[in-house]
Image 1 (cartoon, rainbow, N blue to C red):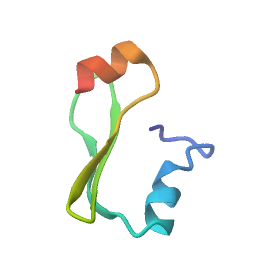
Image 2 (image 1 turned 60 degrees about the vertical axis):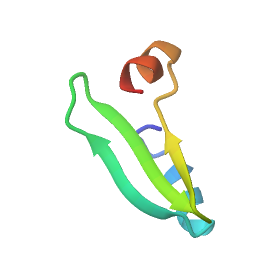
Image 3 (image 1 turned 30 degrees about the horizontal axis):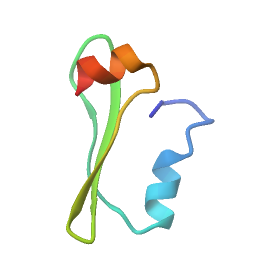
Image 4 (image 1 turned 45 degrees about the vertical axis):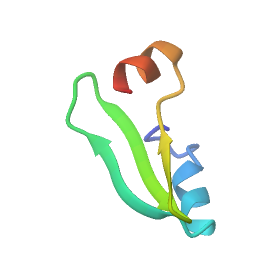
Length: 57
């Protein structure tokens, strides 16, 4: 996940009819995170950096 023009994951969620639960959390440093649900399964998208993903998770 990212907040830039080249992050296509949000649009991919929409194209696949994933119901968005939330986008972003109030955490410093800024943490773009997207959670959605499709067919009864939860989908969580974290930042690209392994360290940032582990901290956010």
